[in-house]
Length: 335
Image 1: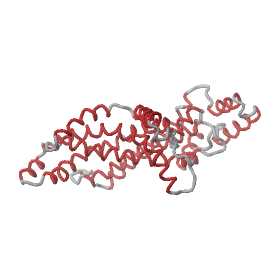
Image 2 (image 1 turned 60 degrees about the vertical axis):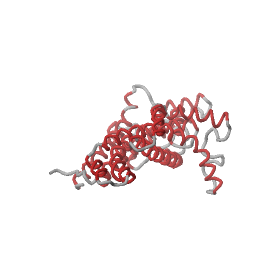
Image 3 (image 1 turned 120 degrees about the horizontal axis):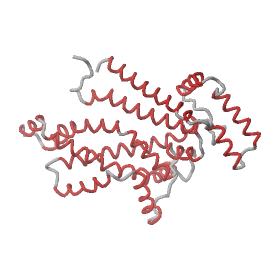
Image 4 (image 1 turned 45 degrees about the vertical axis):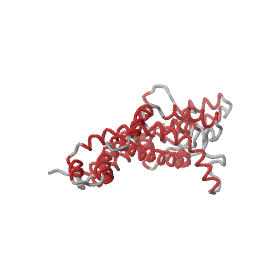
C-alpha cells in the first residue's frame, strides 16, 4: 500500500466530512421563514416553561452565540470551526447543558450495544453461511436456510417489538426497556454490570437475530463461489484435511468480501440500532435522537447526525486501509 493511496483516502475522508457538515449547515436554512431557536422558545412559552421576557433573552443569547447577525459566510466559517472542535453549542431542550456533554453520556451505551451485537451477528452469521455452503456439512443444517432468508427481511425494530411482547409482557423474565434500574452514573459494581447486561439482552438480541440471516446468506453465496477456485481444488487434490480446507482456504478467502460488506453496511446497522434504542428506551444515541426530534432540539440533532456520518466515514476509511493487510494480493499502487 503506497503512501499516495493513504493520502488520497484521507483526502476523500475529509471531503466527505466537509460535505456532510456543509449540508447540516445549509439544509435548515433552505426552509424560508423558519427560525429553530424562536420555534423552540415559543413552544416552551406555550407550555408554560418560560416567560415571554425569558424567550427574548434566550433567543438573543443564542443568536449572539451563533453569530446569526453576521453575513452567511461568516456564520459558515464559524460553524466549521466549532464543528472541528466538536462544539455543537447548547441544547435547546435542556439549556444550559451542552450538546457534546449529552452525546458523551449516551455514546458509550450505543458503542457497547452496537459493537458487541454487530460483531456477534457478523461472526455467527458468517460461520453459519460458510457451513451452509460447505458440501460436507450435515444435511440437517440446510434446513436453516429458510429461517435465515426470513430473518434477513425483518427490520430490527419489528423484531424488537416481538421480543418485548414475548419476554417482557408474556414471560416477564426480562425488563421492558432502559439501560439499568440503578440509573446511568452509579458506582461501578458487579451488580450494576449484571443489571446493564440484563437490560441489554433484548435490544442486542433484536439486532443480532435480525442481522444473522443477511450475513449467513451472503456468506453462503461467497463460499459456493470460493469452492470453485483453483486453490481450493488443488488443496483437495493434495489430500489436505477437510477442516483445514474449510478454514484456511475456503472461509479465509470468502470472508474478504464479507468484511467489505461489514464496513459498507455500517450506516444501515447504525440507523436500525437507533430505532431499537428508541423502542427499548435504551439510554444511547438513538433514544437521545428520538427525544431531540420530539422536542425540536435542532442543535442536538445536528450533533448526533454529525457523529453518525463521522462513524460511517471512519469505518469505510479503516476498511480501505486494512484491506491490503487482510488480502496480500491487493496492492493499491500503479504499475
